Amino acid sequence: MEFSVLLVEDDEHIRQALGLALDDEGFAVHDAVSGEEALAMLDTATFDVVLLDLMLPGVDGLEVCRLLRARGDLPIIIVTARADAADVIAGLEAGADDYVTKPLVASVLAARIRALLRRRGGGRQDEVIRFGHLEIRPDVGTVHRAGNEVHVTRTEFRLLVELASAGGRIVSREQLLQRVWGYDYFGDTRLLDVHIRRLRRKVEENPDEPKLVVTVRGAGYRMDL
Image (cartoon, rainbow, N blue to C red):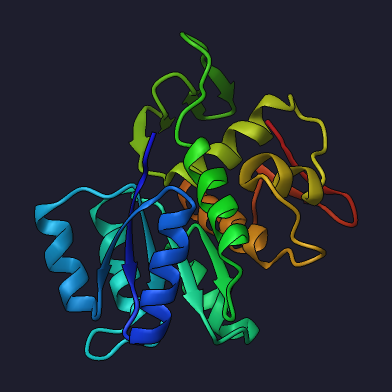
């Protein structure tokens, strides 16, 4: 199956080189040179994933990311030359599922795209996981908190299912990175930390004092009743 990628990049050289490389990897690549153009294209066409540069003219990448996330759970990967921790965290907090830094290796980026897209579904039919006030249905991808549906992204949902399926056992950070994102981060756990914070805002009564998604210092996370 050929996946459709929207590449949002204002640097013509990078846009052309990356577009050709991803085309060789089997993706159908469409490009936009600004945030405004990307948003207009997404109004009229459907894509499987968005590759989004942060440093865009006009509407910058962070704002585009926020606007896209407000529309739904379309997978978003930040592509940036700004590897500073604050910039990476800002992109993830804006709603991105993943990030990669320039210079890029096309085969690695392609692997990350495929790993993210593989995690769109994969639920077991008719299963319901209940943890405290949460009801999770992997088969249809829904989460209810105290009877009210909670909107989560695909990545947040996958993370929640992995934690809940462990039945209260500790899941290490490395295991979560491998199971949810599908590859190693070589010790960089910022991606996981930000997604845990985002998830807590949606499922905890008080995200600053989590009672459901609990940190086990030095070991990982677990779901508590």
